[in-house]
Image 1: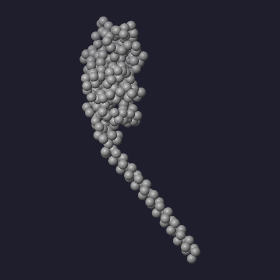
Image 2: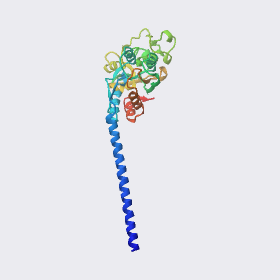
Image 3: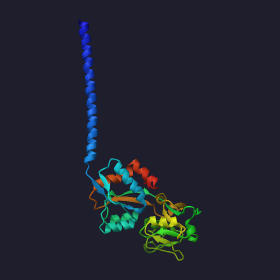
Image 4: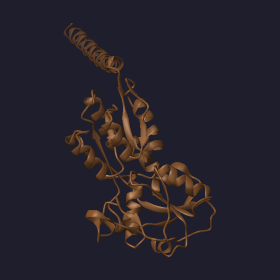
Length: 299
């Protein structure tokens, strides 16, 4: 009788333990389902927001891809207005004229300095995002190679650069000043290279480059090969446009560092959402892959 009772007690204990395991499992499963439902509910009910981005012309292809990836990466509540791609100087002019934007990404520190000085952006949100290189390009299949600044100074090739509103043009002017092609004036008089702004000067007698209002247009002149032999653009433009090949790299010590700063505008009505996007652009592996794909180096 005692043995039977002991056996029944063991069986009862085993049954109780089994029931507890089932209850814990169900509880864990329920919590997991609740967490999933809560996440789905949060994503579904997140406040819709539309962000207006002003970005340097050279970012167009990469930024379009990044914005799509951002929405797909759990930010379905975010929409992007018609992103404006202009030269950095033009973007500042648009802000000065009252155009609305949440985020400004410039292709030069100088242009962002102006935006800060004029109150277009919140300086506390400013961050250096990308680096780039200045290269000399020609039409694919041109047969040119190893083109140097001195070759330009020796008038071996006709060339195109951006005008004073285009940062790539400013960097090119800085570099060309080191070989006497570009002549600084005003506060920059007597200086060369990275010590000048690349603005308000002039080209030395005998040099008549084609000037254009965006680095994209400059690249297109090289693509056609009809008007100029070579053009000064960013490495990223080679990826962005195609149809050109790098025939020379401008020495980095002949111009200021090419850095793209970003900042939230002073007028933004979506500061939190804009900051989240700005952070994602710098920290997300998906974003980093896209930037690098289009020739940009993260700072």
